Length: 238
Image 1 (cartoon, rainbow, N blue to C red):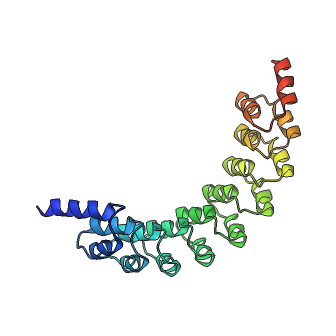
Image 2: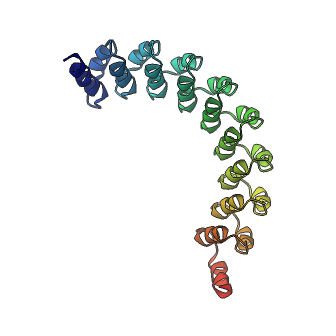
């Protein structure tokens, strides 16, 4: 019977129609699963979330870190949590302050640093530090961030890891001079990303239309910015 009652309380805590007053009461439930559902619910008040941020269960604190109603000062405290999964969610949260993100950029867990690299609130100075990260996936997330400045994209365009260069090639903010260089990259997936980029100039697309790789060629054909004249020229060569 006790298990059944927990299941009922979990369902109530999860329900988007449950009023915040009821969620505040359920936040004191002794069952971890119930408190976790309260922490997930977007109806939960910031005051209740602040209390759950001190919960002994890491999974509950993780959900608090994800919740859009969690106060900035609470996210700052959770950024120091012993559990990496909690810190990761803080690093992903769009409400996390740039100062906190700057601190998390030094985290020992690469997934935390990667979340910082992808967060739209991360300052360019912080992204500049992450450019030097030893993990290619972190550098790739910097390269894919819409807020990454041109100077950093220029550095990452020369990265030893092809997947990082591919992210630069796909970034809508990458200038044509860099796209022109990446269009000659030795890895076809980088060239394909250039061919898919809607900001790639027509003269570069025309050059990529001659690429020996079929998938690069297809990306040029499917790019909405490829001029009709270029497409007509390609039909003559077919």
